[in-house]
Length: 173
Image (cartoon, rainbow, N blue to C red):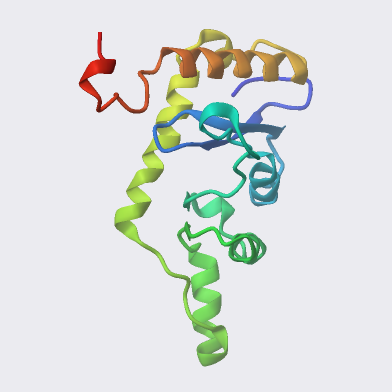
């Protein structure tokens, strides 16, 4: 997203909810592998229960990610956590499995209709980029850039309409 002390780019890893609002963000150097960040993103999820009563919710209903997060270790971790996922298989992994024949195993399940929901994450990034300070990445320090993205995420959460309208007519103004 721009020049920083760590190099030419900074990667922002984002875990967004169904309406495209950021739940968790992590920052890495541009040359760092994406696949190693998925478990850390999942560990950082903590969604409050309605009314603030009870333990935070840590388990996702479903995860949709792009090919960069499709390693065997990530898929194994998602299965161990009981999180259903839709992640496409990289072409080189598919070719490797085909070369092995019957020893290559079965291809992972992939629901192309469900994968279209990944556009919510792209929209979340685009909403963040609407903030000039995030898009231009003039901040030289990682801590300041993280703060900028956090403030932008909070503003996005505050601007959005409520999730559910009350079904009770007496609750409406």
